Length: 139
Image 1 (cartoon, rainbow, N blue to C red):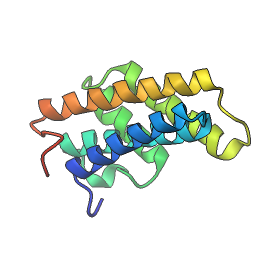
Image 2: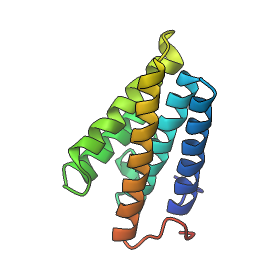
Image 3: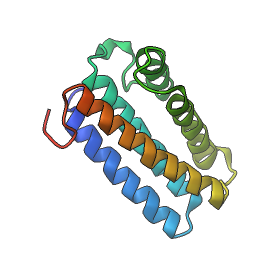
Image 4: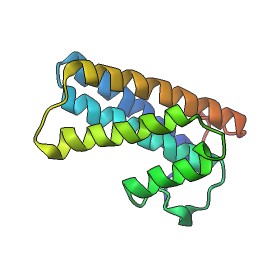
């Protein structure tokens, strides 16, 4: 994860979250799902870095690797709720549909995903503080 830090990842997550809301407001459900997922993806990476998960654990190499690492090190360890783990997985599935399936995500589903992304990013910010990492401070 060269060049990545908790600070830069959380800043990316915040930007992606703002983009998701803007796209939702413009009526672009698929784009909103994409950006909402990446907000969660970047926040999950930041949380894993802040909790000292070894980079060799698949951190950021693949989407599946990140989801599995997040589940193993944060959800199963009890540091993050199972519901947040499920939301991250559902977001990845929605992003896949929006980006590759040829289908479109319904606006109400996209709005729910953006709201879940907002909650997920906020929860990861709290985890960073608990881990002694201020999300707005350079790592």
